[in-house]
Length: 189
Image (cartoon, rainbow, N blue to C red; front, side, top):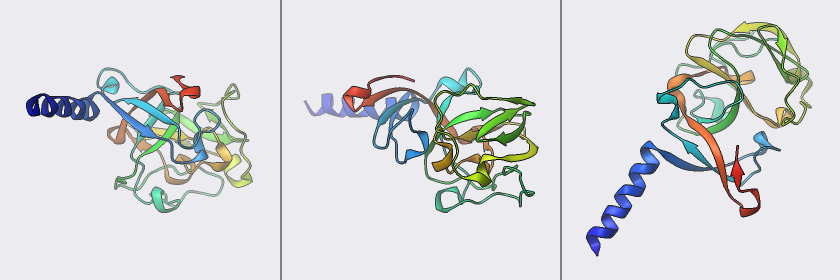
């Protein structure tokens, strides 16, 4: 009996470490897509076989300083999103949506990303930005190689890459693909 319990526990821990891990949503930054306290499952191995894409909802480690405020790795120019993160990785986990890929140019207009000169207004899942300073960042930045620009769906209540910069690929834990709690919000993302 002890061997069976030990094997079951070992298998459960291995699955969480390498395959699928549950996470709880800590803030309102992803509303209305994900509510505070809602729980999601994250595919930890998908990005070993494919690249992250615009629109993916991912769990990742933000740059150091993002978890205690807004800290950019360089001083951004006025009206510019943070172009570079700090070099250290935070131990915290964040969940946001990818809005720009490596090599893309990006600015922000009324809370919507303008990627490679094309405004992404077809984002039916976002709550418009209420913070005038972060709603319009008209100066264009270029996303560095192997980095991804993240924004929460609730643009006015999201501490995201606008403030602390793009996230290196190696800091991405995986893609959220399903919700499992509460039962009335069960589904895929």
